[in-house]
Image (cartoon, rainbow, N blue to C red; front, side, top):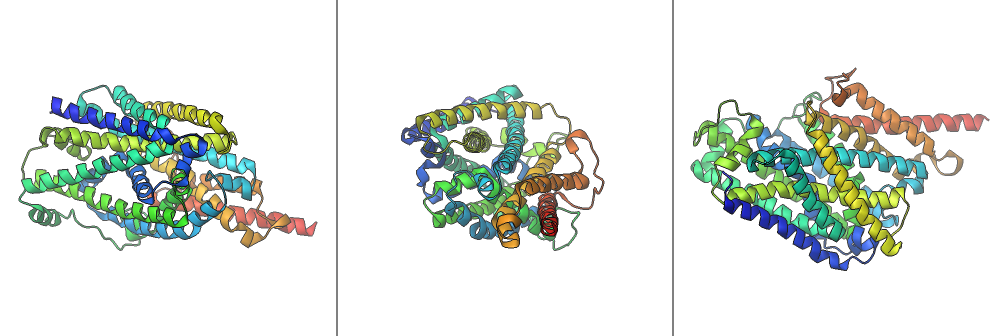
Length: 497
Protein backbone atom coordinates (compact mmCIF):
# COMPACT_ATOMS: atom_id res chain seq x y z
CA UNK A 1 0.00 0.00 0.00
CA UNK A 2 1.26 3.48 -0.90
CA UNK A 3 1.26 5.46 2.36
CA UNK A 4 1.65 9.13 3.29
CA UNK A 5 5.33 8.51 4.06
CA UNK A 6 5.80 7.05 0.57
CA UNK A 7 4.16 10.12 -0.97
CA UNK A 8 6.51 12.37 1.00
CA UNK A 9 9.55 10.45 -0.29
CA UNK A 10 8.30 10.62 -3.88
CA UNK A 11 7.43 14.32 -3.81
CA UNK A 12 10.75 15.15 -2.12
CA UNK A 13 12.58 13.39 -4.92
CA UNK A 14 10.68 15.28 -7.64
CA UNK A 15 11.36 18.60 -5.92
CA UNK A 16 15.06 17.76 -5.61
CA UNK A 17 15.21 17.10 -9.36
CA UNK A 18 13.74 20.52 -10.05
CA UNK A 19 16.14 22.15 -7.56
CA UNK A 20 19.16 20.68 -9.34
CA UNK A 21 17.90 22.02 -12.66
CA UNK A 22 17.48 25.49 -11.20
CA UNK A 23 20.89 25.42 -9.53
CA UNK A 24 22.94 24.46 -12.59
CA UNK A 25 21.04 26.82 -14.90
CA UNK A 26 23.01 29.78 -13.51
CA UNK A 27 25.97 29.20 -15.85
CA UNK A 28 24.03 29.03 -19.10
CA UNK A 29 24.88 32.25 -20.92
CA UNK A 30 24.80 31.01 -24.50
CA UNK A 31 23.82 28.07 -26.69
CA UNK A 32 27.13 26.25 -26.23
CA UNK A 33 26.76 26.34 -22.45
CA UNK A 34 23.15 25.17 -22.69
CA UNK A 35 23.75 22.33 -25.14
CA UNK A 36 27.34 21.23 -24.43
CA UNK A 37 27.99 22.52 -20.92
CA UNK A 38 30.88 24.58 -22.23
CA UNK A 39 32.79 21.37 -22.98
CA UNK A 40 33.98 21.10 -19.38
CA UNK A 41 31.69 18.66 -17.59
CA UNK A 42 33.58 16.01 -15.53
CA UNK A 43 33.87 12.69 -17.36
CA UNK A 44 32.63 10.73 -14.35
CA UNK A 45 29.35 12.65 -14.37
CA UNK A 46 29.07 12.24 -18.15
CA UNK A 47 29.69 8.49 -17.87
CA UNK A 48 26.97 8.10 -15.26
CA UNK A 49 24.64 10.20 -17.40
CA UNK A 50 25.30 8.00 -20.43
CA UNK A 51 24.16 4.87 -18.63
CA UNK A 52 21.27 6.65 -16.88
CA UNK A 53 19.99 7.67 -20.31
CA UNK A 54 20.42 4.14 -21.67
CA UNK A 55 18.84 1.95 -19.02
CA UNK A 56 15.39 3.59 -18.72
CA UNK A 57 12.48 2.41 -16.59
CA UNK A 58 11.99 -0.62 -18.83
CA UNK A 59 15.30 -1.96 -17.45
CA UNK A 60 14.10 -1.47 -13.89
CA UNK A 61 10.85 -3.30 -14.56
CA UNK A 62 11.58 -5.41 -17.64
CA UNK A 63 14.87 -7.08 -16.67
CA UNK A 64 13.44 -8.68 -13.50
CA UNK A 65 10.35 -9.79 -15.44
CA UNK A 66 12.53 -11.36 -18.13
CA UNK A 67 14.51 -13.47 -15.65
CA UNK A 68 11.37 -14.32 -13.67
CA UNK A 69 9.92 -15.86 -16.83
CA UNK A 70 13.16 -17.18 -18.37
CA UNK A 71 16.84 -16.80 -17.38
CA UNK A 72 19.87 -14.48 -17.53
CA UNK A 73 21.07 -15.25 -21.06
CA UNK A 74 20.57 -11.64 -22.11
CA UNK A 75 23.62 -10.87 -19.96
CA UNK A 76 25.51 -11.81 -23.12
CA UNK A 77 24.47 -8.36 -24.36
CA UNK A 78 27.45 -7.12 -22.34
CA UNK A 79 29.77 -8.80 -24.85
CA UNK A 80 28.19 -6.61 -27.53
CA UNK A 81 28.53 -3.60 -25.23
CA UNK A 82 32.26 -4.27 -24.78
CA UNK A 83 32.77 -4.57 -28.55
CA UNK A 84 30.89 -1.31 -29.07
CA UNK A 85 33.02 0.56 -26.53
CA UNK A 86 36.19 -0.42 -28.41
CA UNK A 87 34.77 0.53 -31.82
CA UNK A 88 33.24 3.81 -30.64
CA UNK A 89 36.40 4.71 -28.72
CA UNK A 90 38.73 4.19 -31.69
CA UNK A 91 36.48 5.12 -34.61
CA UNK A 92 33.73 7.52 -33.56
CA UNK A 93 34.80 9.66 -30.60
CA UNK A 94 38.14 10.85 -32.07
CA UNK A 95 36.43 11.87 -35.32
CA UNK A 96 33.63 13.70 -33.53
CA UNK A 97 36.06 15.53 -31.27
CA UNK A 98 38.49 16.58 -34.01
CA UNK A 99 36.02 17.46 -36.78
CA UNK A 100 34.84 20.68 -35.14
CA UNK A 101 31.17 19.67 -35.27
CA UNK A 102 28.58 20.51 -32.63
CA UNK A 103 25.94 18.02 -33.79
CA UNK A 104 26.40 14.38 -34.80
CA UNK A 105 24.65 14.89 -38.12
CA UNK A 106 26.62 17.98 -39.08
CA UNK A 107 29.26 15.52 -40.27
CA UNK A 108 26.99 14.44 -43.15
CA UNK A 109 26.87 17.95 -44.57
CA UNK A 110 30.66 18.13 -44.44
CA UNK A 111 31.08 14.73 -46.15
CA UNK A 112 28.04 14.62 -48.47
CA UNK A 113 25.43 17.39 -48.60
CA UNK A 114 22.91 19.34 -46.55
CA UNK A 115 19.96 17.13 -47.66
CA UNK A 116 21.76 14.04 -46.30
CA UNK A 117 22.26 15.85 -42.99
CA UNK A 118 18.60 16.83 -42.85
CA UNK A 119 17.40 13.31 -43.65
CA UNK A 120 19.64 11.83 -40.94
CA UNK A 121 18.30 14.37 -38.44
CA UNK A 122 14.71 13.54 -39.42
CA UNK A 123 15.36 9.82 -38.96
CA UNK A 124 16.89 10.47 -35.56
CA UNK A 125 14.02 12.68 -34.41
CA UNK A 126 11.38 10.16 -35.50
CA UNK A 127 13.18 7.28 -33.81
CA UNK A 128 13.79 9.15 -30.59
CA UNK A 129 10.24 10.47 -30.38
CA UNK A 130 8.77 7.00 -30.85
CA UNK A 131 11.23 5.51 -28.37
CA UNK A 132 10.62 8.29 -25.83
CA UNK A 133 6.87 7.87 -26.07
CA UNK A 134 7.14 4.17 -25.30
CA UNK A 135 9.71 4.67 -22.52
CA UNK A 136 7.47 7.28 -20.93
CA UNK A 137 4.28 5.26 -21.32
CA UNK A 138 5.56 1.93 -19.96
CA UNK A 139 6.62 3.15 -16.48
CA UNK A 140 3.64 5.50 -16.27
CA UNK A 141 1.40 2.47 -16.69
CA UNK A 142 3.00 0.92 -13.62
CA UNK A 143 3.00 4.20 -11.70
CA UNK A 144 -0.71 4.64 -12.39
CA UNK A 145 -1.41 1.19 -10.95
CA UNK A 146 0.76 1.69 -7.87
CA UNK A 147 -0.36 5.24 -7.08
CA UNK A 148 -4.00 4.64 -8.10
CA UNK A 149 -4.03 7.64 -10.40
CA UNK A 150 -5.10 8.12 -14.01
CA UNK A 151 -2.57 6.94 -16.60
CA UNK A 152 -2.64 10.25 -18.44
CA UNK A 153 -1.90 12.12 -15.20
CA UNK A 154 1.06 9.82 -14.47
CA UNK A 155 2.48 10.52 -17.93
CA UNK A 156 1.97 14.27 -17.74
CA UNK A 157 3.36 14.75 -14.21
CA UNK A 158 6.59 12.79 -14.70
CA UNK A 159 7.11 14.44 -18.09
CA UNK A 160 6.37 17.94 -16.78
CA UNK A 161 9.06 17.69 -14.09
CA UNK A 162 11.65 16.51 -16.63
CA UNK A 163 10.68 19.24 -19.10
CA UNK A 164 10.90 21.91 -16.38
CA UNK A 165 14.41 21.16 -15.14
CA UNK A 166 15.72 20.50 -18.66
CA UNK A 167 14.26 23.82 -19.85
CA UNK A 168 16.06 25.65 -17.06
CA UNK A 169 19.40 23.88 -16.94
CA UNK A 170 20.02 22.36 -20.39
CA UNK A 171 22.63 19.61 -20.69
CA UNK A 172 24.06 20.41 -17.26
CA UNK A 173 20.68 19.80 -15.64
CA UNK A 174 20.26 16.60 -17.65
CA UNK A 175 23.67 15.23 -16.68
CA UNK A 176 23.61 16.16 -12.98
CA UNK A 177 20.03 15.01 -12.46
CA UNK A 178 21.02 11.81 -14.28
CA UNK A 179 23.74 11.30 -11.68
CA UNK A 180 21.21 11.62 -8.85
CA UNK A 181 18.68 9.51 -10.71
CA UNK A 182 21.22 6.75 -11.29
CA UNK A 183 22.04 6.65 -7.59
CA UNK A 184 18.34 6.34 -6.75
CA UNK A 185 17.79 3.86 -9.56
CA UNK A 186 20.71 1.59 -8.68
CA UNK A 187 20.28 2.02 -4.95
CA UNK A 188 16.60 1.10 -5.19
CA UNK A 189 17.41 -2.10 -7.06
CA UNK A 190 20.15 -3.05 -4.59
CA UNK A 191 17.82 -2.43 -1.64
CA UNK A 192 15.12 -4.66 -3.16
CA UNK A 193 17.67 -7.44 -3.74
CA UNK A 194 18.89 -7.21 -0.14
CA UNK A 195 15.38 -7.27 1.31
CA UNK A 196 14.29 -10.27 -0.78
CA UNK A 197 17.51 -12.19 -0.07
CA UNK A 198 17.14 -11.66 3.66
CA UNK A 199 13.54 -12.83 3.48
CA UNK A 200 14.52 -16.21 1.97
CA UNK A 201 17.57 -16.99 4.12
CA UNK A 202 20.33 -14.81 2.69
CA UNK A 203 21.90 -14.24 -0.69
CA UNK A 204 23.66 -17.61 -0.75
CA UNK A 205 20.44 -19.52 -0.15
CA UNK A 206 18.59 -17.37 -2.68
CA UNK A 207 21.32 -17.91 -5.31
CA UNK A 208 21.30 -21.67 -4.75
CA UNK A 209 17.52 -21.87 -5.17
CA UNK A 210 17.67 -19.62 -8.25
CA UNK A 211 20.35 -21.81 -9.81
CA UNK A 212 18.32 -24.92 -9.05
CA UNK A 213 15.38 -23.35 -10.91
CA UNK A 214 17.57 -22.56 -13.94
CA UNK A 215 17.31 -18.79 -13.47
CA UNK A 216 21.07 -18.15 -13.35
CA UNK A 217 21.86 -19.57 -16.81
CA UNK A 218 23.58 -16.78 -18.72
CA UNK A 219 25.60 -18.53 -21.47
CA UNK A 220 24.39 -20.18 -24.67
CA UNK A 221 27.09 -20.75 -27.29
CA UNK A 222 24.57 -21.68 -29.99
CA UNK A 223 24.94 -20.12 -33.42
CA UNK A 224 21.17 -20.05 -34.00
CA UNK A 225 20.45 -16.63 -35.55
CA UNK A 226 16.68 -17.07 -35.14
CA UNK A 227 17.06 -17.13 -31.35
CA UNK A 228 17.86 -13.84 -29.59
CA UNK A 229 19.23 -15.70 -26.54
CA UNK A 230 22.34 -17.14 -28.21
CA UNK A 231 25.95 -16.00 -28.33
CA UNK A 232 25.84 -15.11 -32.00
CA UNK A 233 22.70 -12.97 -31.57
CA UNK A 234 22.93 -11.52 -28.07
CA UNK A 235 26.71 -11.41 -28.03
CA UNK A 236 27.72 -10.27 -31.53
CA UNK A 237 24.72 -9.06 -33.57
CA UNK A 238 23.71 -6.91 -30.62
CA UNK A 239 27.10 -5.19 -30.84
CA UNK A 240 25.90 -3.44 -34.03
CA UNK A 241 22.90 -2.02 -32.16
CA UNK A 242 25.16 -0.84 -29.34
CA UNK A 243 27.56 0.81 -31.80
CA UNK A 244 24.63 2.50 -33.54
CA UNK A 245 23.35 3.90 -30.25
CA UNK A 246 26.67 4.82 -28.65
CA UNK A 247 28.20 6.13 -31.87
CA UNK A 248 25.29 7.69 -33.78
CA UNK A 249 22.77 8.87 -31.19
CA UNK A 250 22.89 12.62 -30.62
CA UNK A 251 22.30 12.02 -26.89
CA UNK A 252 25.63 10.20 -26.69
CA UNK A 253 27.54 12.42 -29.12
CA UNK A 254 26.36 15.52 -27.26
CA UNK A 255 27.78 14.10 -24.04
CA UNK A 256 31.10 13.19 -25.67
CA UNK A 257 31.36 16.79 -26.84
CA UNK A 258 30.59 18.06 -23.33
CA UNK A 259 33.84 16.49 -22.06
CA UNK A 260 37.07 18.45 -22.28
CA UNK A 261 38.93 16.14 -24.71
CA UNK A 262 39.02 12.74 -26.44
CA UNK A 263 40.55 10.98 -23.46
CA UNK A 264 37.85 12.23 -21.09
CA UNK A 265 35.10 11.29 -23.57
CA UNK A 266 36.50 7.76 -23.86
CA UNK A 267 36.72 7.45 -20.10
CA UNK A 268 33.07 8.42 -19.79
CA UNK A 269 32.17 5.83 -22.43
CA UNK A 270 34.05 3.04 -20.65
CA UNK A 271 32.53 4.00 -17.30
CA UNK A 272 29.05 3.85 -18.79
CA UNK A 273 29.72 0.29 -20.03
CA UNK A 274 31.00 -0.86 -16.62
CA UNK A 275 28.00 0.66 -14.87
CA UNK A 276 25.68 -0.79 -17.51
CA UNK A 277 27.05 -4.26 -16.82
CA UNK A 278 26.54 -3.72 -13.09
CA UNK A 279 22.95 -2.57 -13.67
CA UNK A 280 22.16 -5.60 -15.81
CA UNK A 281 23.58 -8.04 -13.27
CA UNK A 282 21.76 -6.32 -10.42
CA UNK A 283 18.31 -6.28 -11.98
CA UNK A 284 18.61 -9.78 -13.42
CA UNK A 285 19.34 -10.96 -9.89
CA UNK A 286 16.29 -9.05 -8.68
CA UNK A 287 14.24 -11.12 -11.13
CA UNK A 288 15.82 -14.35 -9.90
CA UNK A 289 15.21 -13.30 -6.30
CA UNK A 290 11.56 -12.56 -7.01
CA UNK A 291 11.14 -16.02 -8.52
CA UNK A 292 12.69 -17.65 -5.43
CA UNK A 293 10.60 -15.46 -3.12
CA UNK A 294 7.27 -16.42 -4.68
CA UNK A 295 7.86 -19.79 -6.38
CA UNK A 296 10.60 -21.59 -4.41
CA UNK A 297 10.59 -20.25 -0.86
CA UNK A 298 6.86 -19.44 -0.97
CA UNK A 299 7.45 -16.40 1.24
CA UNK A 300 4.24 -14.90 -0.14
CA UNK A 301 1.45 -15.84 -2.52
CA UNK A 302 0.76 -14.09 -5.82
CA UNK A 303 -2.80 -13.37 -6.95
CA UNK A 304 -4.03 -15.92 -9.44
CA UNK A 305 -3.51 -15.01 -13.10
CA UNK A 306 -0.81 -12.39 -12.39
CA UNK A 307 1.55 -12.11 -15.39
CA UNK A 308 5.34 -12.06 -15.11
CA UNK A 309 5.44 -8.35 -16.00
CA UNK A 310 3.21 -7.57 -13.02
CA UNK A 311 5.16 -9.49 -10.36
CA UNK A 312 7.69 -6.77 -9.53
CA UNK A 313 5.08 -3.97 -9.36
CA UNK A 314 2.98 -6.22 -7.10
CA UNK A 315 5.98 -6.78 -4.83
CA UNK A 316 6.73 -3.05 -4.72
CA UNK A 317 3.24 -2.33 -3.41
CA UNK A 318 2.76 -5.33 -1.14
CA UNK A 319 6.22 -6.59 -0.15
CA UNK A 320 8.23 -3.51 0.78
CA UNK A 321 8.34 -1.57 4.08
CA UNK A 322 6.74 1.87 4.39
CA UNK A 323 8.97 4.53 2.86
CA UNK A 324 10.93 2.04 0.77
CA UNK A 325 7.94 1.73 -1.57
CA UNK A 326 8.12 5.48 -2.12
CA UNK A 327 11.85 5.23 -2.84
CA UNK A 328 11.34 2.48 -5.42
CA UNK A 329 8.54 4.41 -7.12
CA UNK A 330 10.91 7.40 -7.15
CA UNK A 331 13.46 5.15 -8.87
CA UNK A 332 10.92 4.31 -11.58
CA UNK A 333 10.19 8.02 -11.99
CA UNK A 334 13.94 8.67 -12.09
CA UNK A 335 14.44 6.29 -14.99
CA UNK A 336 11.45 7.67 -16.90
CA UNK A 337 12.50 11.29 -16.43
CA UNK A 338 16.10 10.52 -17.35
CA UNK A 339 14.96 9.03 -20.66
CA UNK A 340 12.78 12.04 -21.45
CA UNK A 341 15.15 14.80 -20.33
CA UNK A 342 18.08 13.48 -22.34
CA UNK A 343 15.86 13.00 -25.38
CA UNK A 344 14.30 16.46 -25.46
CA UNK A 345 17.63 18.17 -24.84
CA UNK A 346 19.30 16.37 -27.75
CA UNK A 347 16.24 16.90 -29.95
CA UNK A 348 16.45 20.61 -29.15
CA UNK A 349 20.10 20.61 -30.19
CA UNK A 350 19.25 18.78 -33.43
CA UNK A 351 16.46 21.25 -34.19
CA UNK A 352 18.61 24.30 -33.56
CA UNK A 353 21.69 23.10 -35.41
CA UNK A 354 20.63 20.57 -38.05
CA UNK A 355 17.33 22.10 -39.14
CA UNK A 356 17.83 25.83 -38.50
CA UNK A 357 21.61 25.87 -38.94
CA UNK A 358 22.37 28.13 -35.99
CA UNK A 359 25.76 27.83 -34.28
CA UNK A 360 26.96 28.22 -30.70
CA UNK A 361 27.75 31.89 -31.30
CA UNK A 362 24.12 32.77 -32.02
CA UNK A 363 23.93 34.44 -28.60
CA UNK A 364 20.92 34.83 -26.35
CA UNK A 365 18.57 34.37 -29.30
CA UNK A 366 19.86 30.85 -29.91
CA UNK A 367 19.55 30.07 -26.22
CA UNK A 368 15.93 31.19 -26.15
CA UNK A 369 15.08 29.15 -29.23
CA UNK A 370 16.77 26.09 -27.75
CA UNK A 371 14.60 26.42 -24.65
CA UNK A 372 11.50 26.71 -26.78
CA UNK A 373 12.52 23.56 -28.67
CA UNK A 374 12.94 21.76 -25.34
CA UNK A 375 9.31 22.47 -24.45
CA UNK A 376 8.05 21.63 -27.96
CA UNK A 377 9.78 18.25 -28.02
CA UNK A 378 8.70 17.55 -24.44
CA UNK A 379 5.07 18.12 -25.34
CA UNK A 380 5.46 15.93 -28.43
CA UNK A 381 6.98 13.24 -26.20
CA UNK A 382 3.88 13.37 -24.00
CA UNK A 383 1.69 13.13 -27.10
CA UNK A 384 3.53 10.03 -28.33
CA UNK A 385 3.29 8.46 -24.86
CA UNK A 386 -0.47 9.05 -24.87
CA UNK A 387 -0.60 7.65 -28.39
CA UNK A 388 1.29 4.54 -27.24
CA UNK A 389 -1.38 4.06 -24.57
CA UNK A 390 -4.01 3.65 -27.30
CA UNK A 391 -2.15 0.94 -29.21
CA UNK A 392 -3.33 -2.65 -28.95
CA UNK A 393 -0.29 -4.39 -30.43
CA UNK A 394 2.99 -5.27 -28.76
CA UNK A 395 4.85 -2.11 -27.77
CA UNK A 396 8.09 -4.10 -27.58
CA UNK A 397 7.78 -5.35 -31.17
CA UNK A 398 6.97 -1.85 -32.40
CA UNK A 399 9.90 -0.37 -30.49
CA UNK A 400 12.33 -2.98 -31.84
CA UNK A 401 11.07 -2.43 -35.38
CA UNK A 402 11.60 1.33 -35.33
CA UNK A 403 14.98 0.91 -33.61
CA UNK A 404 16.25 -1.28 -36.44
CA UNK A 405 14.53 0.83 -39.08
CA UNK A 406 16.38 4.03 -38.16
CA UNK A 407 19.53 3.13 -36.21
CA UNK A 408 20.92 0.60 -38.73
CA UNK A 409 20.84 2.99 -41.73
CA UNK A 410 22.21 5.81 -39.54
CA UNK A 411 25.17 3.66 -38.57
CA UNK A 412 25.69 2.80 -42.23
CA UNK A 413 25.69 6.50 -43.08
CA UNK A 414 28.32 7.28 -40.45
CA UNK A 415 30.60 4.46 -41.61
CA UNK A 416 30.27 5.70 -45.17
CA UNK A 417 31.07 9.24 -44.03
CA UNK A 418 34.17 7.99 -42.20
CA UNK A 419 35.60 5.64 -44.82
CA UNK A 420 34.03 6.29 -48.27
CA UNK A 421 36.86 8.60 -49.34
CA UNK A 422 39.34 5.76 -48.76
CA UNK A 423 37.28 3.48 -50.99
CA UNK A 424 36.34 5.86 -53.82
CA UNK A 425 38.72 8.74 -53.32
CA UNK A 426 37.75 12.40 -53.67
CA UNK A 427 36.74 14.60 -56.56
CA UNK A 428 34.42 13.20 -59.22
CA UNK A 429 34.63 9.65 -57.88
CA UNK A 430 33.62 10.50 -54.31
CA UNK A 431 30.47 9.05 -52.79
CA UNK A 432 27.56 11.24 -53.86
CA UNK A 433 24.92 12.50 -51.46
CA UNK A 434 21.96 11.31 -53.51
CA UNK A 435 23.49 7.82 -53.63
CA UNK A 436 23.57 7.75 -49.81
CA UNK A 437 19.88 8.70 -49.71
CA UNK A 438 18.98 5.90 -52.14
CA UNK A 439 21.04 3.45 -50.07
CA UNK A 440 19.26 4.46 -46.87
CA UNK A 441 15.86 3.86 -48.45
CA UNK A 442 17.01 0.40 -49.56
CA UNK A 443 18.37 -0.31 -46.08
CA UNK A 444 15.00 0.47 -44.54
CA UNK A 445 13.20 -1.62 -47.16
CA UNK A 446 15.41 -4.61 -46.38
CA UNK A 447 14.24 -4.53 -42.78
CA UNK A 448 10.61 -4.57 -43.84
CA UNK A 449 11.34 -7.74 -45.83
CA UNK A 450 12.68 -9.62 -42.78
CA UNK A 451 10.48 -8.08 -40.08
CA UNK A 452 7.37 -6.69 -41.74
CA UNK A 453 5.68 -3.65 -40.17
CA UNK A 454 4.29 -4.76 -36.77
CA UNK A 455 2.45 -1.48 -36.13
CA UNK A 456 0.31 -1.99 -39.25
CA UNK A 457 0.13 -5.77 -39.21
CA UNK A 458 2.22 -6.15 -42.39
CA UNK A 459 3.81 -9.64 -42.38
CA UNK A 460 7.47 -10.26 -43.18
CA UNK A 461 8.35 -11.93 -46.47
CA UNK A 462 11.44 -13.53 -44.89
CA UNK A 463 10.11 -13.70 -41.34
CA UNK A 464 11.43 -16.14 -38.75
CA UNK A 465 14.98 -16.32 -40.08
CA UNK A 466 16.58 -13.60 -37.96
CA UNK A 467 15.93 -12.68 -34.32
CA UNK A 468 15.51 -9.02 -33.37
CA UNK A 469 19.19 -8.21 -32.51
CA UNK A 470 20.01 -8.76 -36.20
CA UNK A 471 17.70 -6.01 -37.49
CA UNK A 472 20.12 -3.07 -37.25
CA UNK A 473 22.87 -5.26 -38.73
CA UNK A 474 20.68 -6.09 -41.75
CA UNK A 475 19.60 -2.50 -42.44
CA UNK A 476 23.16 -1.21 -41.91
CA UNK A 477 24.86 -3.70 -44.23
CA UNK A 478 22.22 -3.20 -46.91
CA UNK A 479 22.71 0.57 -46.73
CA UNK A 480 26.49 0.28 -47.11
CA UNK A 481 26.34 -2.37 -49.85
CA UNK A 482 23.82 -0.43 -51.96
CA UNK A 483 25.77 2.83 -51.57
CA UNK A 484 29.02 1.21 -52.68
CA UNK A 485 27.39 -0.63 -55.58
CA UNK A 486 25.37 2.29 -56.94
CA UNK A 487 28.25 4.75 -56.65
CA UNK A 488 30.61 2.28 -58.39
CA UNK A 489 28.12 1.90 -61.25
CA UNK A 490 27.74 5.68 -61.56
CA UNK A 491 31.52 6.09 -61.63
CA UNK A 492 31.82 3.37 -64.25
CA UNK A 493 29.36 5.08 -66.59
CA UNK A 494 31.05 8.43 -65.96
CA UNK A 495 34.40 6.98 -67.06
CA UNK A 496 32.89 5.52 -70.27
CA UNK A 497 31.44 8.86 -71.19
